[in-house]
Figure 1 (cartoon, helix red, strand yellow):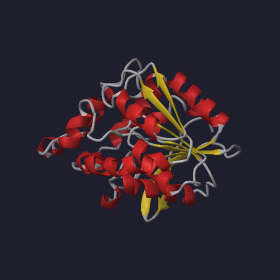
Figure 2 (cartoon, rainbow, N blue to C red):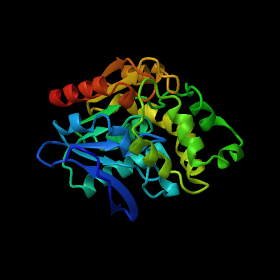
Figure 3 (cartoon, rainbow, N blue to C red):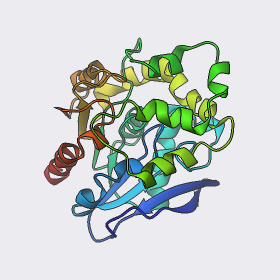
Figure 4 (cartoon, helix red, strand yellow):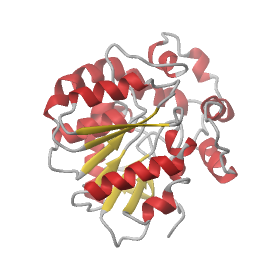
Length: 271
């Protein structure tokens, strides 16, 4: 299977959407970025599938997976990532978790040191106090959520996709992103996750030096949403990490899919 074919299964009582490639290689668990979905891997799927058994998952509350309020923070999501790996009987998978998956993957690795073969992250908030560009800074810190409650699916997706540089989203991908935002409160409910950054990232800071899982950081070198300072901060504090900056903005996995896939594959081959 060299294309994404979504399906659903129940994990911890929640309807979780996922896609899977042929299961004849070491496993890699791919986590959806925000406000996208598992289709964020459309541009890299066929290349990554040549090297790993891919299981791509819309995290709870993101993409087309069911939301539960108690999971809408990086620390809580980190525990759910372990439940996903358990549900798919993945013994020691690689994890790829860009964007909102960055902090959650690190919480998972900190709490379960031997659970994952390696972690690939980046383009996600890490610094405390936060160092974020627009619109993420506002999503984290704005006191009044009323303007966001009025956003429709096209508003949410277009705000994000207008920041994509040099990559034309295939229609099937854009339609999937749009379909994830049916319902008036979906986006505001998701905002709780990043609004937990000031508290959770402070906790994470104390855990970073003890994370022994190998970590590959990939960041767009001119990311206007999550500046490179966040990846550099993690690289300085994680004892077993590598940092690659690639020619891209925030959505590096789509904007420079070839380079993103190359770095990921080389990392997997090393570990």
